[in-house]
Image (cartoon, rainbow, N blue to C red; front, side, top):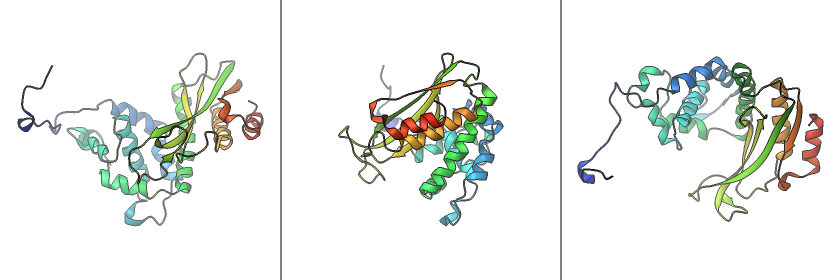
Length: 243
């Protein structure tokens, strides 16, 4: 298969006002609204003192970013896809990529923690609304792991070389699953690329286990991790939550 026109004569654009590329976002955003994500962000994320109005309408901006990511955006500029075709007729309050970029750049570590608090509460509501994680299973598995995500710009904040010998950012992720459900992400944290794999694992695991219990799960919890996370602090976090 090949394109039937020369590159100079071919121009493709998705701008017809009657076309909708991501109609499935209706269900996604409606589910987020039913589980209270906008209200939680508005309540917990306070970018007070941020310049250029970056802290206003945090709920609308957060939902715009979530919607763009679900639709496949992997950069700030890509978030403009939410304004293509007939999507503006389906969704109100969509912010421009430049506005969303200003919003994200205003975040400090404290604001990230505020957002994490909103996400934990949302995860519990989502689980209750959808039954993502069955509460009746006898054993629940909580897995913690880390991974280096390569990046390709030397100016990327926090990017550095770690054990993979690639410039990247090093994130931790905690999932919960049972024998009857797929893994569900309950906690994540982004660190510098040069961070040790187990750095901050105990505190992240404490938050993840608290979230799992807040979902109404009373079953036995088994925590699984590789040797990078074997430490007294991690074991203490497990025992503190009965895992």
